[in-house]
Image (cartoon, rainbow over all chains, first blue to last red; front, top):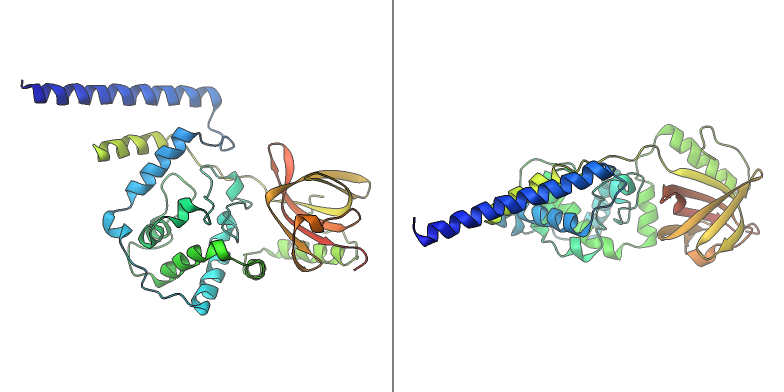
Length: 204
Length: 100
């Protein structure tokens, strides 16, 4: 066996042993500490997740250009779409601090920050269309590269860092709401106006 | 080699299972009786609740976009909060100054 093959074999075996040791260590920690979604990921798990996510998008997808030109009308339409479909987890302002977002593990990223904004348009498009495996991010589209609604959402994600308070309040009108939530909202409005009425089903 | 690392990474991640939070936001209505730092105390019908004002908390004051400093003792408030680290933490605060 040549020295090159011996080196490759030893490298392979070393890699297997290292991976096995890592898996056993992590598994031991999880058996000891449980699988609660309340425990936030450590730095290593986060880096591994980001690495996997980055490499799950092909070079071709990453290079795709947004075919939709930004305009006030496009942003407004995408804003309503985001409020209706995305804000439940991502929050209207993209912070990820929402009823479901704060309970998810891994949590939705703050879409306004560099970690998201530094991704290419094609990468953002791919994430929306294909979802993120083993996370709460579903695949919203088909494998098509030409879903204009998704491309418009990419424009809106780019717009999030400059979202105004007025836009955010407008999004609240587009957030999905159940009849009981609507009644509770009306009761809250009346309370703020000085009409004290206890809504049914209120937790306080 | 890159693909091998990705496979290992993905294999590790399969041990993490996302779990949705149970329940919804707590809706806290009442009058502000105390503000100490980023802790606001809300009282209604003899019951008091302390709520943490976080960096991500958004505010609506008298029907318009507001900020934390708009909150004063005596304001009527509706706070949508979630338990985080055992403490009610505000996601949104709607407040009205009683003289408005």
